[in-house]
Image (cartoon, rainbow, N blue to C red; front, top):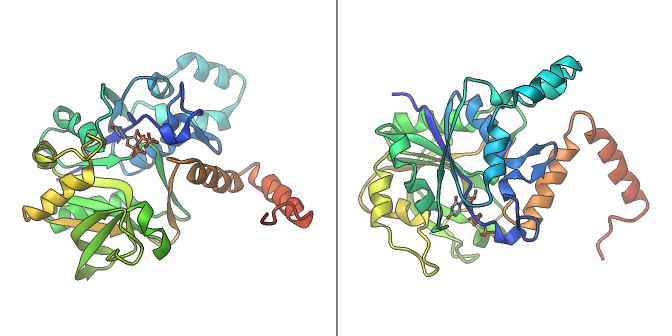
Length: 301
Ligand code: UTP
């Protein structure tokens, strides 16, 4: 069995990034040279998945424009010999097909995923959050490892998880794993959204990438909305576990890091890390920061 489809939910309101997101999607905010969501698409294409559905919403048309090939721009870049810029537009190539569906009311991530039901059909599929990037320092490919694990363990759901500092558990969905672990793959016993420090069963945080069997759509239908009226995917996955479906998690490898741009602290940190590693300007930026440090401008207040 092959996994050929991916879903990128990008319909959220991004209220934590106001006013930057008043009239533009947070997923289009630049992180270094590219909009955040372009890294997500490139990650998916690199794992040989070519059919991508965006779950979009109001004020999100710039995402469609970004992934729509622009022959005039390509012609101009070719004529002026700007081949390095052309390389950054490779995601537009014919090998990938982009589809769009609208979530008209932002009723939560599980509701957004539910809209992919007809697109997905009967095969397992990937969900990659449009505001979260996975950066790898070598040739690791998280999605490929997740797909392998999903098919090998015959799971109904496979979740990416990242080891985080124990004091940060209250910010994330945290998995509790069963004893059985093979390499970096473990069976999930439970999933708790933002546990108190000291009460968390692990320091493994859900990391914005999932593989689902289509059975997830039945479980989303049975999920009860939270106090804010939103359908949370964590609740649908918990329901899955309760009904004895197998759920596994795959740990990010050494050198892999998850970045999300959902709030200003994480967005600024992501921008700094990506900019510092930029091929052309990273060196200059590092020098700039070193100078600031020597002048005492990076001290704590
Ligand atoms: P968040 O949980 O960060 O929610 O979404 P949000 O609405 O975008 O942001 P805030 O809380 O208002 O600041 C995580 C991912 O899920 C998508 C978002 O676009 C983002 O990529 N999402 C979230 C949807 O597609 N639909 C929803 O109803 C909620």
